[in-house]
Length: 187
Image (cartoon, rainbow, N blue to C red):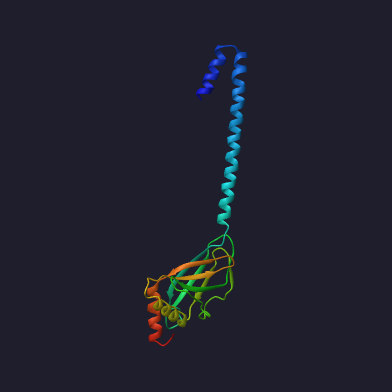
């Protein structure tokens, strides 16, 4: 702003030829710099938008682990609800349990009746429900007992076509369900 006022004052108080020789080349150079900075900003904004779109255009799952009571089952079940939250469809092919510090995964050999069938393709917002047999929960509790010398964390791992997603499982839920299953001779 000060530059424009100074240029206007100089043009009004002196020789117009001198003004044209001094200030017009400076204004032209300034215009070149402004257009260059604008072009650089446009390129940077395009790169940022492309990277943001790439990072959002992936598979994403929300995994909830809970103890469920079904109306036609006389005992609670360990269940996993998987919801697709990403922009890409997800092909869920299976689940397993992992205990940190343990060398092996627990791969369930099947799911309790009423579970959705696998593999399943989930679009945005679609949900998958899986219920585990009591014997899988008892076996998981036994695996936890094998790692008693170190603090354990249990995760359910959900496999898709491109990666594995994990969610933490509450150890108290596993142990209390396993105790009930063993007491009622279900596991």
